[in-house]
Length: 238
Image (cartoon, rainbow, N blue to C red):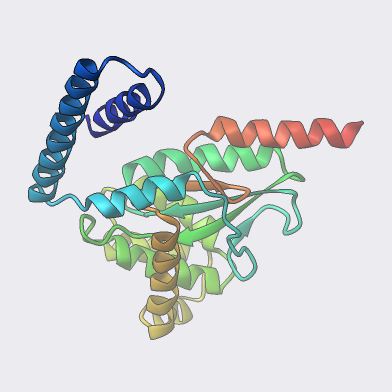
Protein backbone atom coordinates (compact mmCIF):
# COMPACT_ATOMS: atom_id res chain seq x y z
CA UNK A 1 0.00 0.00 0.00
CA UNK A 2 2.90 2.31 0.77
CA UNK A 3 4.28 1.84 -2.76
CA UNK A 4 0.90 2.51 -4.35
CA UNK A 5 0.45 5.63 -2.24
CA UNK A 6 3.91 6.90 -3.14
CA UNK A 7 3.22 6.33 -6.85
CA UNK A 8 -0.06 8.22 -6.52
CA UNK A 9 1.71 11.17 -4.95
CA UNK A 10 4.32 11.19 -7.72
CA UNK A 11 1.62 11.00 -10.38
CA UNK A 12 -0.28 13.89 -8.86
CA UNK A 13 2.91 15.88 -8.54
CA UNK A 14 3.60 15.33 -12.24
CA UNK A 15 0.09 16.48 -13.08
CA UNK A 16 0.62 19.68 -11.14
CA UNK A 17 3.97 20.30 -12.81
CA UNK A 18 3.09 19.67 -16.45
CA UNK A 19 -0.68 19.59 -17.05
CA UNK A 20 -1.25 23.21 -15.99
CA UNK A 21 -4.97 22.75 -15.13
CA UNK A 22 -7.22 25.64 -14.03
CA UNK A 23 -6.59 27.07 -10.59
CA UNK A 24 -9.61 25.30 -9.08
CA UNK A 25 -8.31 21.94 -10.24
CA UNK A 26 -4.84 22.76 -8.92
CA UNK A 27 -6.30 23.44 -5.47
CA UNK A 28 -8.18 20.13 -5.58
CA UNK A 29 -5.05 18.26 -6.63
CA UNK A 30 -2.99 19.94 -3.91
CA UNK A 31 -5.60 18.92 -1.34
CA UNK A 32 -5.47 15.35 -2.64
CA UNK A 33 -1.65 15.31 -2.37
CA UNK A 34 -1.87 16.56 1.22
CA UNK A 35 -4.45 13.88 2.02
CA UNK A 36 -2.30 11.12 0.52
CA UNK A 37 0.77 12.42 2.35
CA UNK A 38 -1.14 12.30 5.62
CA UNK A 39 -2.29 8.76 4.83
CA UNK A 40 1.27 7.71 4.08
CA UNK A 41 2.55 9.10 7.39
CA UNK A 42 -0.27 7.29 9.21
CA UNK A 43 0.60 4.01 7.52
CA UNK A 44 4.25 4.44 8.46
CA UNK A 45 3.27 4.96 12.10
CA UNK A 46 1.07 1.84 12.03
CA UNK A 47 3.91 -0.25 10.61
CA UNK A 48 6.31 1.17 13.20
CA UNK A 49 3.87 0.27 16.00
CA UNK A 50 3.89 -3.31 14.69
CA UNK A 51 7.64 -3.44 15.16
CA UNK A 52 8.69 -2.92 11.55
CA UNK A 53 11.80 -0.85 10.91
CA UNK A 54 10.68 1.13 7.87
CA UNK A 55 13.97 2.92 7.27
CA UNK A 56 15.85 -0.38 7.50
CA UNK A 57 13.49 -2.00 5.00
CA UNK A 58 13.85 0.93 2.62
CA UNK A 59 17.62 0.59 2.76
CA UNK A 60 17.32 -3.16 2.18
CA UNK A 61 15.21 -2.61 -0.94
CA UNK A 62 17.73 -0.12 -2.26
CA UNK A 63 20.59 -2.53 -1.59
CA UNK A 64 18.81 -5.30 -3.50
CA UNK A 65 19.18 -3.22 -6.64
CA UNK A 66 22.91 -2.74 -6.11
CA UNK A 67 25.86 -4.75 -7.38
CA UNK A 68 28.49 -5.64 -4.78
CA UNK A 69 32.08 -6.80 -4.85
CA UNK A 70 31.70 -9.66 -2.37
CA UNK A 71 34.99 -11.35 -1.43
CA UNK A 72 35.23 -15.03 -2.33
CA UNK A 73 38.84 -15.72 -1.37
CA UNK A 74 39.10 -17.53 1.94
CA UNK A 75 35.57 -18.94 1.76
CA UNK A 76 34.51 -22.51 1.10
CA UNK A 77 33.89 -22.69 -2.65
CA UNK A 78 31.91 -25.38 -4.44
CA UNK A 79 33.43 -25.67 -7.92
CA UNK A 80 36.61 -24.45 -9.52
CA UNK A 81 38.18 -21.48 -7.80
CA UNK A 82 38.57 -19.55 -11.07
CA UNK A 83 35.14 -20.32 -12.54
CA UNK A 84 33.78 -17.24 -14.37
CA UNK A 85 30.27 -17.21 -12.87
CA UNK A 86 30.15 -16.62 -9.12
CA UNK A 87 27.27 -17.15 -6.74
CA UNK A 88 27.56 -16.17 -3.07
CA UNK A 89 25.14 -18.04 -0.83
CA UNK A 90 24.04 -16.71 2.57
CA UNK A 91 22.26 -19.58 4.26
CA UNK A 92 20.83 -20.82 7.55
CA UNK A 93 21.22 -24.50 8.38
CA UNK A 94 17.85 -24.59 10.17
CA UNK A 95 15.91 -22.83 7.41
CA UNK A 96 13.46 -25.06 5.47
CA UNK A 97 13.82 -22.96 2.31
CA UNK A 98 17.60 -23.30 2.49
CA UNK A 99 17.17 -27.06 2.78
CA UNK A 100 15.15 -26.98 -0.44
CA UNK A 101 17.71 -24.78 -2.18
CA UNK A 102 20.73 -26.92 -1.25
CA UNK A 103 20.17 -29.75 -3.78
CA UNK A 104 19.18 -27.22 -6.46
CA UNK A 105 22.50 -25.43 -6.12
CA UNK A 106 24.38 -28.72 -5.95
CA UNK A 107 22.80 -29.86 -9.21
CA UNK A 108 23.41 -26.50 -10.88
CA UNK A 109 27.09 -26.63 -10.08
CA UNK A 110 27.30 -30.24 -11.29
CA UNK A 111 25.68 -29.20 -14.58
CA UNK A 112 28.15 -26.33 -15.03
CA UNK A 113 31.33 -27.67 -13.40
CA UNK A 114 33.76 -25.43 -15.29
CA UNK A 115 31.60 -22.32 -15.27
CA UNK A 116 29.96 -21.98 -11.85
CA UNK A 117 31.49 -21.55 -8.42
CA UNK A 118 29.43 -21.09 -5.26
CA UNK A 119 30.88 -19.33 -2.23
CA UNK A 120 29.46 -20.22 1.17
CA UNK A 121 28.55 -17.63 3.80
CA UNK A 122 27.03 -18.30 7.22
CA UNK A 123 23.82 -16.46 8.11
CA UNK A 124 22.08 -18.24 11.00
CA UNK A 125 18.76 -16.63 11.90
CA UNK A 126 19.42 -16.84 15.61
CA UNK A 127 16.29 -14.95 16.69
CA UNK A 128 13.96 -17.61 15.27
CA UNK A 129 16.09 -20.78 15.01
CA UNK A 130 17.35 -22.05 18.34
CA UNK A 131 19.91 -24.54 16.95
CA UNK A 132 21.09 -22.61 13.94
CA UNK A 133 24.19 -21.08 15.51
CA UNK A 134 25.32 -24.47 16.82
CA UNK A 135 24.86 -25.87 13.34
CA UNK A 136 26.96 -23.16 11.75
CA UNK A 137 29.72 -23.51 14.30
CA UNK A 138 29.82 -27.18 13.33
CA UNK A 139 29.80 -26.25 9.65
CA UNK A 140 32.77 -23.98 10.18
CA UNK A 141 34.59 -26.75 12.03
CA UNK A 142 33.94 -29.15 9.15
CA UNK A 143 35.31 -26.51 6.81
CA UNK A 144 38.53 -26.48 8.80
CA UNK A 145 39.00 -30.03 7.56
CA UNK A 146 37.99 -29.16 4.00
CA UNK A 147 34.52 -30.66 4.27
CA UNK A 148 32.14 -27.72 4.68
CA UNK A 149 30.05 -28.36 1.59
CA UNK A 150 29.92 -32.11 2.23
CA UNK A 151 28.82 -31.44 5.78
CA UNK A 152 26.25 -28.91 4.57
CA UNK A 153 24.66 -31.39 2.17
CA UNK A 154 24.75 -34.09 4.84
CA UNK A 155 22.98 -32.01 7.47
CA UNK A 156 20.42 -29.96 5.51
CA UNK A 157 17.89 -32.84 5.42
CA UNK A 158 17.88 -32.71 9.24
CA UNK A 159 17.04 -29.01 9.45
CA UNK A 160 14.02 -29.72 11.69
CA UNK A 161 16.15 -31.45 14.31
CA UNK A 162 19.70 -30.17 14.52
CA UNK A 163 20.51 -32.03 17.70
CA UNK A 164 24.05 -32.46 18.86
CA UNK A 165 23.72 -36.11 17.94
CA UNK A 166 22.93 -35.16 14.32
CA UNK A 167 25.84 -32.71 14.17
CA UNK A 168 28.23 -35.29 15.55
CA UNK A 169 27.04 -38.23 13.48
CA UNK A 170 27.26 -36.17 10.28
CA UNK A 171 30.87 -35.31 11.07
CA UNK A 172 31.69 -38.93 11.84
CA UNK A 173 30.10 -40.14 8.60
CA UNK A 174 32.45 -37.86 6.66
CA UNK A 175 35.49 -39.29 8.41
CA UNK A 176 36.38 -36.09 10.21
CA UNK A 177 38.89 -36.03 13.04
CA UNK A 178 36.32 -35.87 15.84
CA UNK A 179 38.60 -34.44 18.51
CA UNK A 180 39.61 -31.62 16.21
CA UNK A 181 36.02 -31.12 15.04
CA UNK A 182 34.72 -30.76 18.60
CA UNK A 183 37.52 -28.41 19.59
CA UNK A 184 37.06 -26.24 16.51
CA UNK A 185 33.28 -25.86 16.77
CA UNK A 186 33.59 -24.78 20.41
CA UNK A 187 36.36 -22.27 19.72
CA UNK A 188 36.14 -18.50 19.74
CA UNK A 189 37.45 -18.54 16.18
CA UNK A 190 34.35 -20.42 15.02
CA UNK A 191 31.97 -17.90 16.57
CA UNK A 192 33.97 -14.97 15.24
CA UNK A 193 33.98 -16.39 11.70
CA UNK A 194 30.22 -17.00 11.68
CA UNK A 195 29.45 -13.58 13.14
CA UNK A 196 31.76 -11.97 10.57
CA UNK A 197 29.69 -13.50 7.77
CA UNK A 198 26.50 -12.34 9.47
CA UNK A 199 27.78 -8.76 9.63
CA UNK A 200 28.76 -8.92 5.96
CA UNK A 201 25.29 -10.15 5.05
CA UNK A 202 23.64 -7.39 7.05
CA UNK A 203 25.80 -4.79 5.29
CA UNK A 204 24.50 -6.12 1.95
CA UNK A 205 20.89 -5.96 3.08
CA UNK A 206 20.39 -9.68 3.73
CA UNK A 207 17.30 -10.17 5.89
CA UNK A 208 16.28 -13.73 5.12
CA UNK A 209 17.65 -16.96 3.78
CA UNK A 210 18.60 -18.30 1.39
CA UNK A 211 20.04 -15.12 -0.13
CA UNK A 212 21.88 -15.49 -3.41
CA UNK A 213 24.19 -13.02 -5.12
CA UNK A 214 24.94 -13.71 -8.77
CA UNK A 215 28.14 -11.91 -9.76
CA UNK A 216 27.45 -9.45 -6.96
CA UNK A 217 23.75 -8.81 -7.63
CA UNK A 218 20.91 -10.17 -5.53
CA UNK A 219 18.75 -12.82 -7.19
CA UNK A 220 16.03 -15.17 -6.00
CA UNK A 221 16.01 -17.36 -9.09
CA UNK A 222 18.21 -20.40 -9.73
CA UNK A 223 17.07 -19.94 -13.31
CA UNK A 224 19.03 -16.70 -13.46
CA UNK A 225 22.13 -18.62 -12.44
CA UNK A 226 21.58 -21.31 -15.07
CA UNK A 227 21.02 -18.62 -17.71
CA UNK A 228 24.23 -16.79 -16.76
CA UNK A 229 26.17 -20.05 -17.06
CA UNK A 230 24.55 -20.93 -20.38
CA UNK A 231 25.30 -17.47 -21.80
CA UNK A 232 28.94 -17.71 -20.80
CA UNK A 233 29.28 -21.23 -22.16
CA UNK A 234 27.63 -20.19 -25.43
CA UNK A 235 30.01 -17.26 -25.77
CA UNK A 236 33.03 -19.41 -24.92
CA UNK A 237 32.21 -21.87 -27.73
CA UNK A 238 32.24 -19.13 -30.38
